[in-house]
Length: 257
Image (tube, rainbow, N blue to C red; front, side):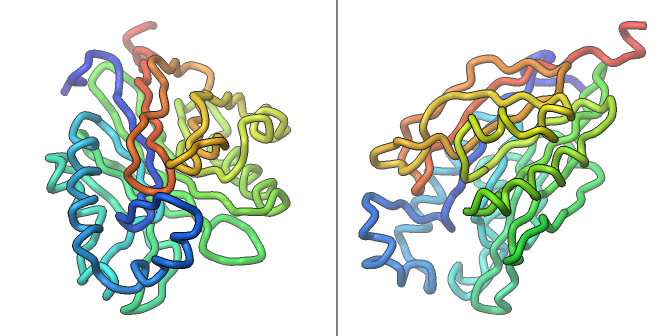
């Protein structure tokens, strides 16, 4: 099995806001009803998201829904995987509101997703989490991919970043991507992130999508991984802009030894 782009994976991260596009802060109030019931606009927007996802090997999703009344029982992760032609997917529910809402993280992939694990992140308020999967291409060591959605407060994020840093300790190639709800400086100055050898790849502001001023979406890489062509895409598909990158994978230790 080989990568479609040789020794690289094209990666995309997006907080999809349950498929809802937002054009102004006031819509969080005036259009809050869209978070409660299915809408035609959300279905159409999911098709746009899937059209973008089809260009990538691995897609990390935050604020998706795993199938509830507000999505007409549609698991948005599975739905996007089918529309995008990405045969492998996994979803992990972060907040379970029964039939009314199933907040989740998701991964879509062109390659098999092995050893999926969900990690509930520490914090005073439950519901923040990280979805871990393993992907292996021929000629390369397994790659640990962690999709994360962190808390709104700096104190809670500090503990969550400690948790994530502990997950990736060791020699295994790892990357963490998603909605971190903080700027790059906070990541670069975090002691546990530094100790784990993780470095942030910065591409610019992602929030709010209609007038981006804050870089809240990030990609953290372990030492052997290299990112190319990292960019924020000017596509208003939710209240965040998509983050895109191409990750060059090192050869496996067997091939280099």
